[in-house]
Image (cartoon, rainbow, N blue to C red; front, top):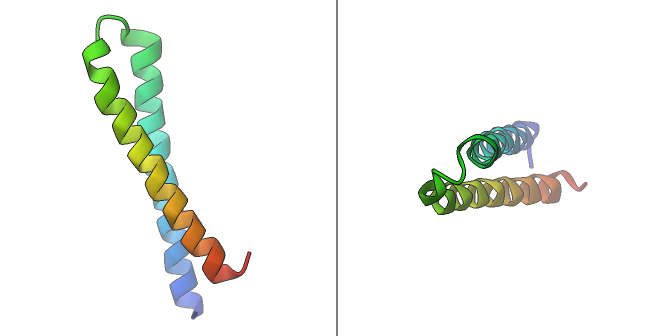
Amino acid sequence: MTEEELKKLEKDVKKNKRLASEKAMELHDLIEDRLPDAYGELMGIAQATFEACQAWDEANKKFLAASGA
């Protein structure tokens, strides 16, 4: 794998980590500030957070496999 391809994979990991962190903050804000009134939003935000973390995990595994780490 070329250095450029590795950098792209690393960039994908960082992007997915940022997105997962943003979803986690959204979930945290819901739990800390808006529950129990906004309980109807809980499942949607939790699912989006799970999916964002899953995307990060997949990207990270690809990067680690490609980099030999």
